[in-house]
Image (cartoon, rainbow, N blue to C red):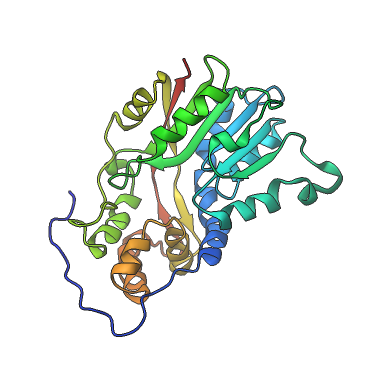
Length: 285
């Protein structure tokens, strides 16, 4: 299913297109991040997240999953080394000055790796989450094993570690749209080429990190947008199309992405793509 034709691109006469990370982070927080709310809710309900939970969120981004856990009474710590712009939005949502007199005790946000999120006074975590879904781009699990290896010593024995991934492409309408990124980014030379999710993706990551799989689930997470422009902005905010923008230009990516979204546009102008995501619960040794 992965495209096999290589698109050759003529050199651009002008400067290479630049992605505005602040605008993309805002689009992520305002449009795209909420698409995974059913996943967060399902995991928190299954694990009974509440006042006794000390949660470490890996790749926490703009912090919606942390905010939902904090609203259940959990003490939350988020780490992210990839997007300072998203982390800045998480600070707006979660840190005490954002809450006024209703500050959430025990909330920490750290730009860096898991080791930066603990010290001798920090209690051990009893829940670790890595909600960034894997399984739609080749190599998208690279680095996750290292993060997990750094995080697991900070957790109590038998702590649940939650991994998330895309479901099978036949149950994810967005898969056909994501292939636009591969086509434009020259997949035979790019590490970010699209590939279908495999059944044991999450289990393989867990086992490489020395974790013991202990249950899984599937959750419907439809992607719904007000219109085509809203859908394009939301999908671009994921970062999955950045290589395509660098390889071509923003106008071409916008055009082909819009065309790929047309089959999912409803008569009222909204865009609706049913998807299924999978989560795995693994345990620390």
